[in-house]
Amino acid sequence: MANSSDTARQVSNLLLAPAMWISSSVPMIFDVGRSISEQSDYNDTLLVPAGIAFSIWFPIFVGCIAYGIIQMLPANKSRAIFRDVGWLTAGSFALITLWGYMAAFPPPAVSAWGTALVFIPAMLLICAAVVKLTARKAELSAPEGVMIYIPLSLLAGWCSIAVFLNWAQLGVHGPIGFGMSETMVCLLTLAAALAWITFIIHKTGGNRAYTFAPVWGLAFLAATRLSADAPNMTIAVAAGIGAIVLIGSALMAGRRARLTTL
Image 1 (cartoon, rainbow, N blue to C red):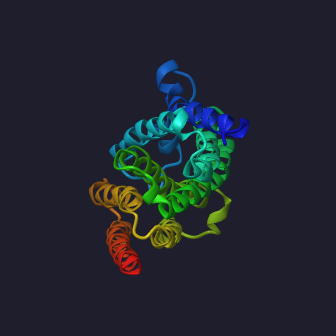
Image 2 (tube, rainbow, N blue to C red):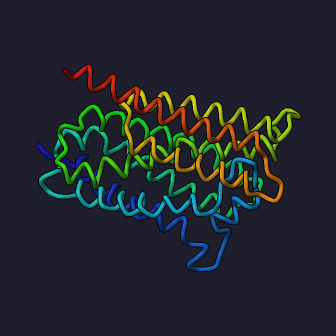
């Protein structure tokens, strides 16, 4: 039986999915504030990949809007799977929208802390949603798998690595580096990211879409560090090994998940 909470959940996801895209596009459209690339340049670290890596946001935004439309359909209003994940996705979308404005408008020092703090719950919420969605994946039709499961998984995967890149800025340019070299700060941050991503990979039975997003970022990170004016082989090799570890983890987790269903 549908209720008012279902309507609020549906409308929230329908509106907040495009709001994420809008918040990150305001500086480019209206020439106010800092663009996402300008924010990255201001807080550049050895963990920032080439700009093309961020193009992954386009299919994520489009897919999340498709999810918002599909879950808004009357037939989906009281479906258990959407009730199970809907408020998690809406919360994550809202925080990612806030992240876009935090990146663009506050003074750089405030922006660095604000984006880092906002990104943590945004990432945790979308990862929780994808873990729940994976457990109920059989309830999705094949088209819903493409238009819901894949984009939400990509978002969770990209946020899972991006949140650590965000905190690396504070380690390199802020007070939490404790005097370590930039390379050491970035290596420790990368190790923490790989540990978290591997954990979620196993929680989702080797979700390939989730795995693809950080592997995409790590591949461009390795290429960027190799082709930079001042190459950093340590970070390049670590990124390459990290990508291989994640792929291997996904294959192992997927095999285990298939065996448990036999």
